[in-house]
Image (tube, rainbow, N blue to C red; front, side):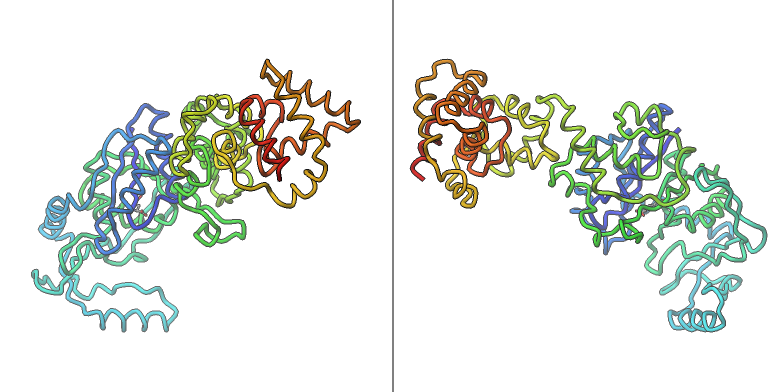
Length: 457
Ligand code: GLU
């Protein structure tokens, strides 16, 4: 069993592409087969190295490892040329000299009659030889039907008379998508072609090519498209659609993979799947025929679940990229894993976590003015805390909590009237968890320094 992911490097790896890659990957892994990555870069005007890198980065970040590849179609031109020549030699393809003008007129005339725009086979029997401005067209069978059993969509059939003679080589000799994809899937022994259903109309044409070349057909599985919240096909208009934009926004790769696997596939009403479960439970037959809807809320919920349930050490590993990016050095402060553990239950994203952990490693310049106006009005609680905490010898959350209680009792104030200004004093923005634990982790010296800063303010 071998499947593949065959992106065209004309942009970043987007949500739809990643979902296709994941399904093809999971199906191969489930059957102990191989997964191949192939970069379809024959469109030289639109393909860029930046996009190739973005695809490789995205696959790497998601952990979708490939057993073979990446293969590049631009390195296989000789092979495509040979196949095109074989088709010509066997009279299964022909040179066509129809001008753009003629084809435009033909299209317009057909459309005016309400008919499908199709090439009329004008050069099919002219037996033209090669030459400038000539394309090569495949002799699509004129009769019979193409019938195949799609593993997702079921039986699909189309009459050959609905299909025109496909261009397999452009006038500059470069091969076209339908030709290269067939040659590659055959040469790379791909027996499961899993891809987006935007290619479903190409499949009958590709099947005809396989047959002309007397090659075994693979199985085909066309995945339903992904819609945005407004019911239109998911696109940039709906916000972030690039996989790496989700990394940047603080998502864990497992959360995104878990979210992606549910886009068009389900297993009962289970929502949370480990990678191992994805591999063992995934089945093409459980893919929905109907389009899937992208729901960012649900992705956020899943991310939060993964953050809550991860080990702090694991999160520390994933935080490194953000810390470097924001130039936050945690080497000289409290153990990051302890801080992470204190933030895990309250962070929906790793970015939120980074916001929350800054105060443990960096001083802030100013207090949130609105909050400070309210919470620092009475400085008695801050002064009392400062005095008592400076005498505290065992710097532990429980002891610190004891001091807060003492201050509350002495000033006859509720816990909030002391805890809130304390939290603001330590965080600068009030955005912090359990204040006794925060104070413990921040350490005695910094706690006292920030209390003083609050009193002075
Ligand atoms: N390169 C094509 C694309 O990115 C996919 C080809 C295929 O999966 O057959 O849309």
